[in-house]
Length: 484
Image 1 (cartoon, rainbow, N blue to C red):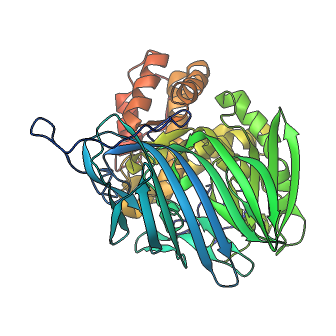
Image 2 (tube, rainbow, N blue to C red):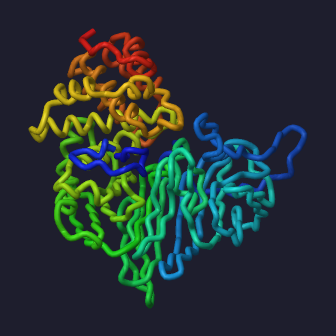
């Protein structure tokens, strides 16, 4: 994410950077019958947890199962702001379950089946509690189908702001971090449970409906049209998105992959079109640094809505506020969001506390891109940030920022400085090997800070505990980095 002054809803800062800024893998399994005999004395069954166990967000996500694939079929009418949906969840039980939960905010559930058999369902706040006709046994696949409808609305977090489905003047935007998906489909809404996606969005003719992954086509049906998308790499749920409205769409191929860019017609053609038009150029440079681009499609979406004052690294196709381009072309923000395709999207968080792994590496990618384009050097950028950082940056440890500072300056600026401190300590050869190895070994998976530190030590053959303790967890400004 490229953020504003206050999290992602803060005041827009213009310039080259707007302070720039998992679970199952592989193809969906063939779900077998999960119907099991009634629990016996030798087999303990119980309800799945109503949370994934994240210390920062205990209610986010759910326990007891692992999703492999979501099939989303939604129909949205901007004139009435009404959404009708069917979500099919292919998953595997990881415990013996009498019930399991899905996150779903606000919408009305009409029916639920599990493996084709009607299941009971109830709502507890933003939790959908499903009771299958027969218990689910650990290790067995199952398929849940949920039909629902209603007027979707965003979620409002008193600390982090608003995220999720937003009705707009010409359509809708479903976007946000750390949560948004549950405002438009039932989901295990935590990055530790990644899944693949097929998305069909039916909207009135004349509107464009954009989502993640490869565009599979547009199918007219009377006064409506269905836009089909497929994301074949595992994706954290907060990286899913839908943007509906009137757009200037450009398509092409690059290295055999489709490129799909969309810019809202609310702003005239200009720097935003040119900036995201350079997506593949930026991606190719980052590929030379981080290793192979991790997804099957490229692209970007530019929106113009006063509630979206940030950019978000939605998988394969980041979404940018048009405000980033008011002062002209801005490829710095493009570099930030594209770097997330490696760090944040392909390599995803296991827990939200480690957000610096996403934002620190993406911030550093901006510095690398600036050096590549000749506008600055990485060392000069580091020195400027190091000298100008506020006391709050040094008092807030980016490796343990707390919920209130999850998207604060320390995570971005000090996170980026931490990456540079590592580079100085281990040297360029080891440093760039660390980045490429991290991207390759953790591809399509989840990771923690401890794992990153362990890999850095393995590759560099150096003890790095004191360096990371000072830069990630200290509450005072560390000494300027030097080679170890």
